[in-house]
Length: 166
Length: 348
Image (tube, rainbow over all chains, first blue to last red):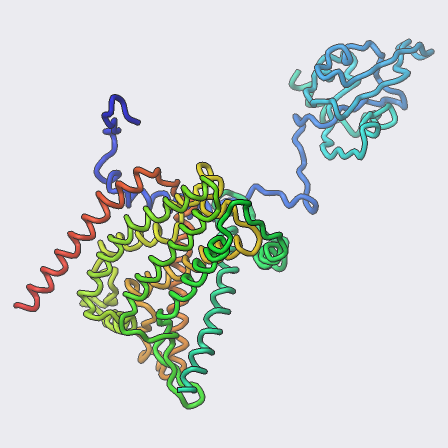
């Protein structure tokens, strides 16, 4: 506030601002109008937030015609900054020739950055809209293929969003 | 003699219960209003519309452990909240909430004590209230508490002067120290049909008094004794459980009392000017008066709450500058002008 013991005052305040009371009334008007604004609180357990398509919830594996799209290239695992993804590949008789024998995401480690989705050449791993993740132990937090596989119908929104914006 | 004692006792009990209920409601209102101002919803789970939230909080406070710091001065540490709450509650004794009511064939004044120096009583008690805060700060053996207590006393000294001086303006106009009579004077109407409230007769005194009242009740923008960012919790840092609850209670009682005093001194008090037009008399008039008083007090309290969620806290030097360099000269000038005008009018 002071420099060399000299008070520096802002000179751009007008007389009415210096009087202060009109400014208080202005502020009161603002807060009074605020009383009637729309509340942004969502009453959580009863009402839930519906995320937009751009929302990055927990990553899931897309399941098409009963099989995962994933070809176990391991790029997601490579790019994952939190080292949360583990992929083990194996051969398959299907056209794609490779499939993940084991695909695990440690949800305690996952930071929901979406890099895996971005890097995936097959659009096989994408971010869903699920955000309610509760675990009771570390082991429970490691999601295997059983929890990760999601039929493609359920993630159409996100796939369309990706097609439009990528 | 015995009869008057019983009546006074009944009035005291009634007032205490009403005050405590009002405090619960005020806490709820404050939380709801603050939430609304910030686009939130606020407490809405306990009871209908969350009305019982404050009750639940009180129950929680009652069940908490009472912690006294190791090197605290225990007797004073215990005494401080009692002073605070006692003073806050007893200030209400002289405030008239209506004229008279006839119950069981007796005329009953609608105030606990009809003191003919009501204003002096209020001034004396409000300055007593600071002892609670200062002692709490001092006895806690905590530097933040001590700072809070010291700030409180410094603040009181700076603002009590302008408060007293602005009251004198009102006294000069109404010519009495008795609150009932001050209200009676305001029941008349000025030319043009506006009521002869002291706000219109003494607007400057009104502003200075309201600002001083904010400072005396330690409400934002003058809540320096408990400035959280600087002093942890201020004077009640080391208090917990019931004793903390008492401080909280006295803060809100002080707020109610301050609004009641503002209403009584400046906003026409309980006076209900259209009693004859509506054909009210006796007890129905008294009820109308009490309602008038309650509505006015409620509005002032709403104003106080809104101010809290509108203005930021003053810095300490700003507080002192405002108190000594702005408020006091304005109040004094107002007093001189009022006195001169009254003298001229008497002389003419």
